[in-house]
Length: 542
Image (cartoon, rainbow, N blue to C red; front, side, top):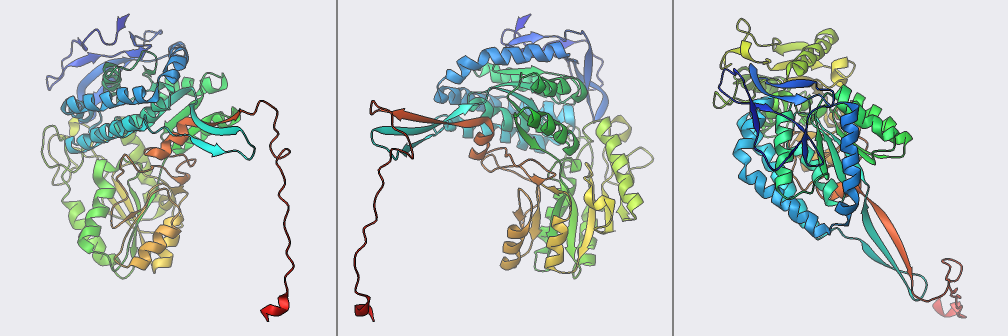
C-alpha cells in the first residue's frame, strides 16, 4: 500500500510500437494506491494505434467500491467543516497545477481517446477554467438573512452539503466533465467516489493524483476503475443500500433512466446529463459561409462524438440544394487521421472499438429508414478510405464522415441519436415548420439557428425546447460559467457549470433564531393590523 503522493508513475514492460510507456494503474482510495480486491485488470488502448497499450488498471469489485464509499463517508465530516474559502484555495491549486501539467495531460488524453491535440487542449483548458471559477465561489457560497414577521427574531438560510456523491461520466470529455461535477461538489463540502470511464482510466488516474497534489485531503475524492456494468453498477446499487447521497451521471438516456429510477425510489438527488439529437436550422437570411462552417464543425468535430454534436440539419427549402452543395464540398475534403502523427486533421479515431461498433449499428437506422446517402462508407480501411485520410487506417478505429439527406419526421433516424460522424438533413417549408422539426425529436439538449432576421432568432430561442441554443453559432461549445444541460430525453433538469450547478450539490437549510426569550408562534402571534375606513363624499368627485 503506497501513498499517492510518495511515488511517481510505475511503468510496466511494454512493446508499444511508438515507444510510449505502459503505466501500472491503481484505484485511489483514501489517498492510497490500491489494486482490485479480485486481482483482475483491464487495458487501456490507443484507438488511433490499437497495438499501443497505455496501461493496466484494476477491474474493481463491489468490495472495492464499498471501500471507496466508506472512505468518502469517513472524510465527509471534516471536509464539510473545512471553511469554504479554504476548500476554494485547494481548488485554485488544482487549476494552477493543471496549467503547469497541461501539455502532458493533453498528450495523454489524445493518446487515450483519439481526440485531436487542439481539441484536447481546449477541453483541459475548460477544466482549468472550472477550477479558477470555483476557487472564488468559496467566498461566495451565500445564504440569506430574512426579516421575521415577529419581533426579536432572526431568520437565516445556509447551503449545506449533501454527503457522498457518486460520479460517473463518459469518456468523450474525460477531463472537463468530471471537473464540472467534482469541483462544485467538493466546493459545497461533499466527498466523492469517481468511477472513471472505462476508455480513459490513465487520464483519470493522472487527474486524481493532481487533485491530491493540490492539497486535497485523503478520502475527499476516491477513484475506482472498471466497467459500467461492474464498478459503475455497484456504485448505483449502493444508493439502495443507503451509502450514496447523490449520483451525477453523464451518458446514454437509457442508463440515465435506470439511475433516475434507483435514485427516485430512495429520494436521492440525481444529476442526469444524457443524449441528444441536436437540431441546427439554416434560414435563407443566414450568412451561408458561416452557416456551412458551423454545420460542418457541429457534425464532424470530435468525430461527431459529443452529446452536443449536430443531429438533424434543418434547411429551408429555398436554399436546401445550394446549402447541401456547399456543405458537401467541405465533407469530401475532410482530413482524418492521428493528430499525434499528422497536422491539420479535423478528427481522429472513434473513442474505442465499442463506440465504432455502435456507430455502424446506428447507421443501419438511416439505411432502413430510406434516407438518401450522400457520403460515407462505414469504417475506413486500406481498401476503403477517403482521399484525405492520413496514415494507416488498419492501425486504428476510423470512420468515414456520413451525410444522409431527404430525411423526414416519420423516419426512425430523425429521432434517434447517432453517436459518431453522421448528420441527417431535413427540408423545412418555412420558419414555423423548421421550429416544429427542431422540437419534434424526443431530445432537448442543444440547438442552433443561423439567421440574420432578428425576429426569427427571437422566435427560435423563445420556442425551442432545449437546454441550450446558439444563434449564428454551432450546436457545440460551452463555457465554464454558463449552465449546461437539457430537457426532455436529454436530462432531468439539473445543470452542470456556473453558479447554477451549486443547486445540484447542496440543500437549503433554514434557521429560526429566537432572541425574545419566549415562545412566539408564526402566523398565530402576529398582531393583526386593522383596516381604517374613512368616510368619503363621492359627490365631490363628479
